[in-house]
Image (cartoon, rainbow, N blue to C red):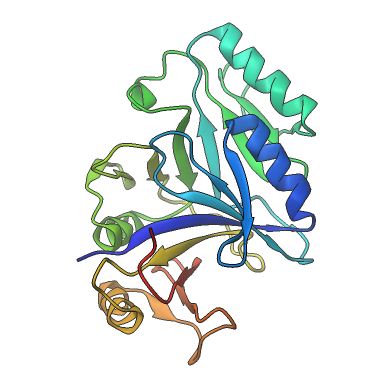
Length: 242
């Protein structure tokens, strides 16, 4: 039995503005309820939601994960870029070369995203969110494969990628050299225990796979804070989620 990836969470100075941006870019429905808070629900096979959590912590460095959005044509790529800019995004330079075909943008709070050129073979069978691209080691790719029960779909030159058996985006880790860790991560995963499972059993299993529990208690919502083998934060929810 393995964890379920319930949500990717963004720390946001203005959660509503950030949710509006991503809802507009992705075409997902927004919901706001007592259980999940401000959340986008996928309208495709992505398989996890996107949550926006209020935080006043400043963004001090490039995020360790970002979305790679796919394009069906050059015109489609231009339309995605134009939509993101109209919603409050902006072009940024993170060292990409002029000959590279993808377009690097930031959302209204500076979180990076890439709009990939058409014809990308690695993402050919993926949807609009082609990948969640992460900075991370080969070891952490193996950890998340075991944690989620998602098979490795790439394992070469210390670069790894996993994908849900049900489809959706790939989650990739680029291998060394890793970016320095500066402050708390602005994006993190919320995991839910498997159906029929419980939080403590799942926390123990994740520790056995190489995770570390970072506190001895639970937060106000009952979540347990942990880090993966690369030291990146994630949370384990109290009960299985639908």
